[in-house]
Image (cartoon, rainbow, N blue to C red; front, side, top):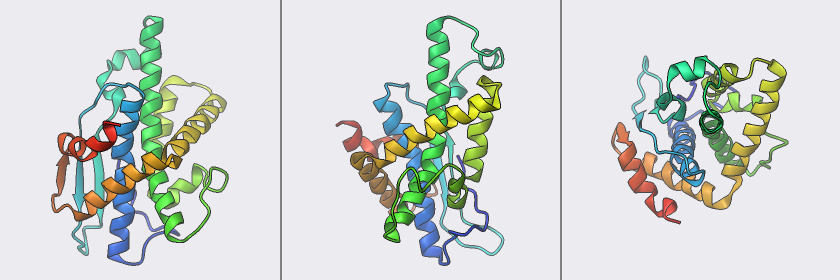
Length: 213
């Protein structure tokens, strides 16, 4: 889950503002992995956050959530054989890949919402579609989401319907005031934290007040 650092229409002009974009993007991923998975009663997964706040000429801003995918904890053969197993196993597999896709999309969606609120613009499901997320560092997230769907849905028409459904769920998650408050809270933590690596245990401790409710 890595924010794409391509030059885009919404690329910030200052280093300080770029850090805010990165913080909200990665906070979206982390809160999705931690809070949304918890809300959906999905198993916890290992991840860590790597973030570089130093600006160097040949080293662009970099932030990445490493790990955090439910599908990585499932047997590869089960994925490649396309839903081999019992009904409950197939349902678990579907829940895992759908949650992973949603969590991928929530990162750039959180960045897009931050920009919309900052600029006092309207933010709704009709104005911000999945393609627009590429303008908010979401290019690699979207590519990964489609690769996931290719494992399970051979038809391109089915994949488009499914990703539209999952995008709507991702949007509704960040549109919930409590979830958005959590993303804002964690983004501030990232901006104020001096570490370059943050463990999932540290992230969970920071998010504990939200997980407890």
